[in-house]
Image (cartoon, rainbow, N blue to C red; front, side):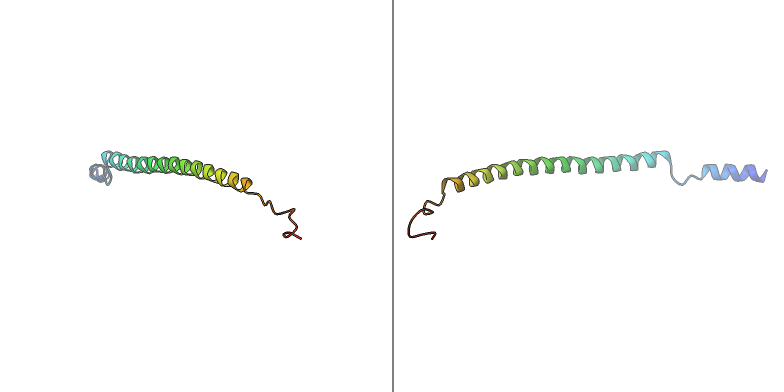
Length: 79
């Protein structure tokens, strides 16, 4: 009888209810979804910036090729 009374008392005394767990899980999912969206957005922006910098780098490389040293065979320079 004491065991039955103890079990009834403990079954009514729950520390964490199912609705609390669901609420915490929803908050965690929303938090990590926001982080994921911000990460994808940042990755897209970095990719776009990298493409822009590659294009600038290619333009600079082409300019260096256009201005070659023409004094190489000159008698006063590059002995």
